[in-house]
Length: 243
Image 1 (cartoon, helix red, strand yellow):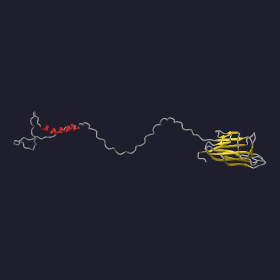
Image 2 (image 1 turned 60 degrees about the vertical axis):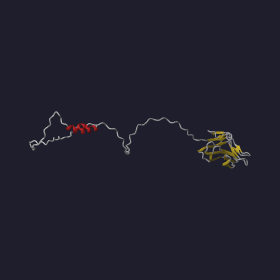
Image 3 (image 1 turned 45 degrees about the vertical axis):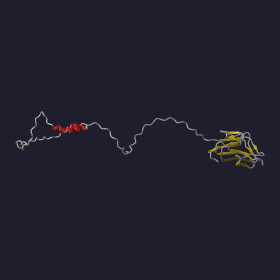
Image 4 (image 1 turned 180 degrees about the horizontal axis):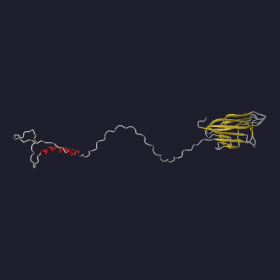
């Protein structure tokens, strides 16, 4: 559109210079101070004055929209905006799969004996005939031994009743090693004697009570009515590093 306007402006002076054939030439413009006599004929025709007239209405019209230019370089990042309002609470998710059960190692026993026992020519394991507690079956009633299944630190306790005028001589054994002794000298009166100990055990270890062999009169007292002899044990602190 701009090119068309420029062409019209270029042709406009030519169009104004051409006199109209249907209209006589206009008289010359004179000022009041000029002479009234016509100028002498010079034999040369006067060139009319040419004035360019621009039609402003043409320039006011908008042209066609041009092609879109190439995008400029991205500007620098602006400062972070303010945080938006908190969103609405979402729906509750599905329940997860059940986890592994938390198993706490346990081991305990409490047994008793209702029969008296005298020493013989060899070491004798103290065998029990009454069960108070043995939930996991870790104590073997036939052999009179506790077998460790869970490693850790254990507490053991032995209670016996002495026989008057007889010696009482027992050991609490860890496998084949004596750990503690339970001893009472011969006396006119029989008394209750007790011994306790804590020890670390590993799986497969054995704990039992051994009556000393006959070198002197050695015995523990009991009867069929009451329980005078007990052997107890339980796991205090589980752990594979015991020992």
